[in-house]
Image (tube, rainbow, N blue to C red; front, top):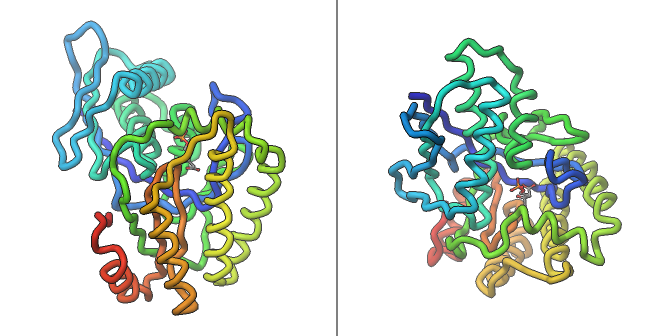
Length: 310
Ligand code: PMV
């Protein structure tokens, strides 16, 4: 049996829109923080069945993947088997330690974990060694965002090169306020397709690329407030694309808006606070500097105690 696991990541500059939907080539560069504590675990077990199959692995958040998601996962598994020349049939078991399909970037952790599992299996059958960057690029063909889960900390995906970048802010504390843990109605694959029809899509690449430059500069200069402002504008830009697509769709609930207003208040009272971002879902991600730990606990206790925080 082969075991693997991989972390999720949250983008501050978002990958949204594809130039090639078969290879998952993004329309713009993205930058993420790897969420070490939100993980997918995979076991690959040889089977005598005629076909590879998927089953849930026991965990707190036992995944019950729908048929479409199982097919997507297994078809990428078959692609990986072909790519590595893996022989035999297998049962893939997977689980997350967090809810899936609700904007916590579970496709990033699950597809990167699957790629790592296939690579391990290939090595055990005498396959060739690959660099982390090559593995990440391979994983991007299953789920684009998964390519940023092969390194810890800050990871940039630009011109089909995935690389870790060294920035002064390290060991950040990640928290996500789970406003809603049900499966979202519009998948991110669907979102990538629909945003191309938004009236705000022309200009999107330029806005995202400019923000990437500005954000890296702010992080390099340890200008936390600027990093917060840029990240805030960026997630609203992505959600504005959703709301101006044809047909329009959205993920924010009234609780999302209430939470966002609370963080805005925290920032205005303290002249400090967390970097805030959202994925394609209703939940709110925070990044705190390590020295903000006490402040983080106080803020979550005071304003978000009615929500599950992961
Ligand atoms: O990897 P995908 O195809 O599930 O795309 C997800 C893209 C976002 O999570 C919405 C943004 C990002 O950059 O991670």
